[in-house]
Length: 388
Image (cartoon, rainbow, N blue to C red; front, side, top):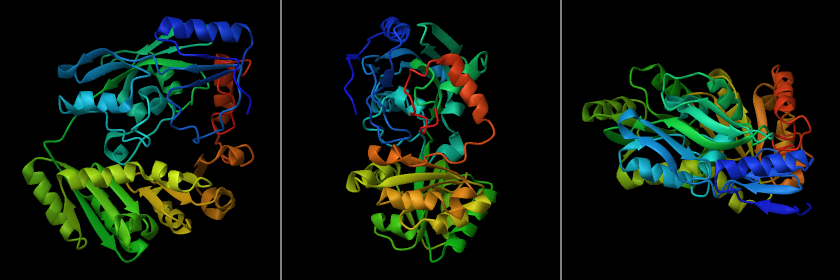
């Protein structure tokens, strides 16, 4: 990997616009990132003529606790955002991996999410507006600070999950969620995968809907001191609702209920499973397979190592100690029956591996959008799983 000619850290949108415009007008390739906490995610970070960091774009632009809205700069630390909102018992419940180091812009550009996505959705459900800057140096406003204002919001949705391949996100507006009055979490063990799947389906058909329904296979559960298939459930509400959750879950399995510190430790463990695993396995890879709930059983059964499923929406994560084992899995039947990508892997493998085999029917549209924003392919080349 070569070294960039220059590294820029603009401190406001105007400086960011100037940096992008100057580089693009000179035909220079550009590497754009926040704190680079997810360098091993998606496509490899290619060498570029200019590196632009958004870390100096910090601060809260506007916060209306009564309206449940906030606008922040892209370089703001994710932990700083969550701590600020917690003072008013509010949240943006995305639960991204690498939350300790990530910036808000990085979380949104990578479309990162975690266990509570089944109840609250992903970034596309929580972002209500955005300012982004094109390679021409134009500041574009999409959406606004009002939840019902959807004018131009589709432009912002293009930026979510684009890994900085289209434009640079400058500010992001969120609709906020109030924290539940009470929360309690539950760990339910099952001897077999079909039993765990059946229990999860029963929960999903019930009247009470937990914020998180995660399924851990025995290898993943072992990191919690368990040796079975494990359903991890997170429930919120008033005291009566929480007690009802406990009664209904007790009828499914002989599990345990967690509160306060033990509950926080559980979900931090689950949310940080990816960075913890990759820190221990430098040759490791993480595969994300999106499938129907019916297909999730076969996908989870196919993973040879630790695996965690967002059991309420069919997103499964498989953890491989060796990247080539992940590549072999990607060529198997389970990957072909789902929308699978190699989400994390070392650079030396990402340069060669097929990271995104089944791109889907809308890929031609995605390529046209890329050409519209970046006709010379200057910005974050290949970061979208080496396809764009």
